[in-house]
Length: 115
Length: 114
Image (tube, rainbow over all chains, first blue to last red; front, side, top):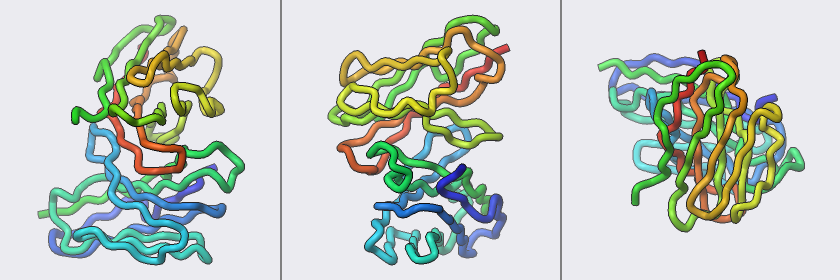
């Protein structure tokens, strides 16, 4: 089963609006990462938040982490048409007793920003 | 830096044929990952190497799939024999260190098995 589940599956907004995507996970984690994937391309790392952090910013991105609720959110402020992509959260697998270093990805949120 | 390099970018083959996908990780990275992405199943980890040694291959679907990393700068994923249900985009990614750090993805190989 998926460790990370994004919500919503798809989101359509107008340029300039904010976009919020959520991720829920099942087991304890060391860190949670967000990635972006443009159509036909590989994933690109956006931001990593550690389990002892609650909020992190990077440019127009804001990530929060609530370990008590096992959830994270990614906020993109003042969205642009170029932000159109799929966004994935990824968690490590230590809670599963699995090996170090590998991540479990959710199925992603497809964001469409209309000009 | 060139980033993670994968070849070929597209592969179309017939059922039963052998397929070999190739990956060159970022120089200096010591962890390498092979993923498969489909609409139905999303992004699945197939196998993971650290310092050229396979660490976790529990995601490899079946014996038809095999992966090697003969040195720090090259890895292959082989499917023999290929089946239509293997059609997917296969990504290679690399990272630095043992912890679940940022992974750098290649552009992927789109495989179509007819």
